[in-house]
Length: 272
Image 1 (spheres, one colour):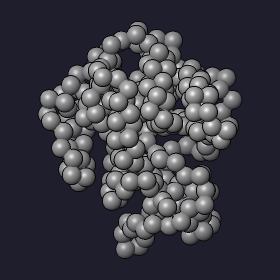
Image 2: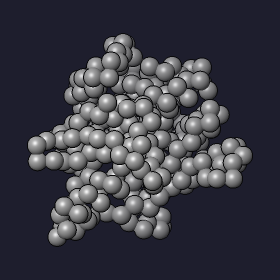
Image 3: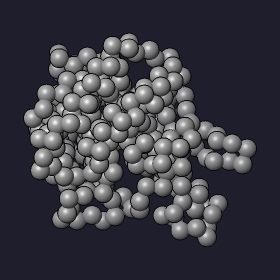
Image 4: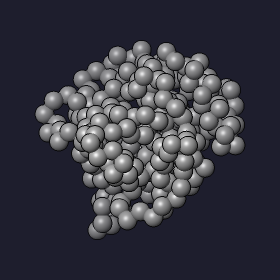
């Protein structure tokens, strides 16, 4: 089951629908990029971003947590961009988390309150301080591109597949079409559900047949339960990472990504 969200005339509605496709949990840039932001926010130690990508893929694999990634527009990965905005612009997103720290702090607190979650103020400041350290550490991002980071994630996916011992794919990378056309931020707390982007587009195509499908509105989806799952896995694998700090960093990264990739004025909808 997934959460299907429709922009109806009377307002934004949610309803569960059966899904026969392969829907996966959704967080900014995929689970590995969000976990990378968690690592940065929890205990930034410099080094290189590719090394930290390798670290988080290994930590998550230890806990049997597997994530995906995506490119866009039939990207052949011959240039610096992989087509995933949350990956390509991660340095700018980390800086956005610092620049808009006050607004993100306020929004994060409101979203967590809606889910019955409270984070100590000292943890909030710790995450902001670590993001600030990363934002000013040019060596950390030196020589790194969206393509090289995607390559590091692909290596992590391959290693995770071997470690899983499964004959079926445990993680995938996809090539998506079109540019970002988000009209809403959907924050989903319903465990084990997500918004079906495919079903959303199918419904909109049917309702607006004269509009180019690539121009139809999309939703920026944040599955909060998946962020919690990632934070628990990192904390279980690394004693120097605590769940609350990783979780706070993960939520901060979602909002900073939305702020950077959109105009910052998107309507936020909570699904529970």
